[in-house]
Amino acid sequence: MSFRVERDELSSPFFEGTDGGTLLIRRCPNCAQAYRPQVEGCGDSDSLRWEAAKGVGTLVSWAVDHSTPLDNSLTSLDGSKVIFGIIELDEGPWLQVPIVGCDPSSLEEGMEMRVCFIRPGGGEAIPAFAPRHVGGLT
Ligand SMILES: [Zn+2]
Image (cartoon, rainbow, N blue to C red):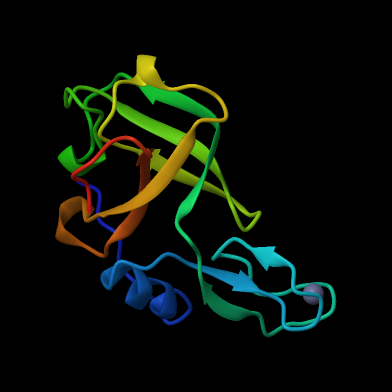
């Protein structure tokens, strides 16, 4: 079994961003509210702008999956587990993402995280997050 992400017309701008190492979010041109990339409209606008996020945030929550990883790019530091977490971006939106390159026991609520990009199955680059002190990930 494999895991691979493909773009469609709606997600194309987002994956153009991740392909170049940029995490894009949405922002309302009227009320300036920031949204997750999947959100297409606000109460006062149906044409949200794309905007580069700083790619940093804090860890809200996470879960560890001990079954066989779908793809090696998704795994924790020792390669045996997959961690999925919720990150609150500095801009405000919450993202559900893989947490990579760390030991699950080292995670703490509220710790600073930063984005990196992985390509499960050689498909589109998707955002993942790692603790900010973990170096060497791109
Ligand atoms: Zn708005």
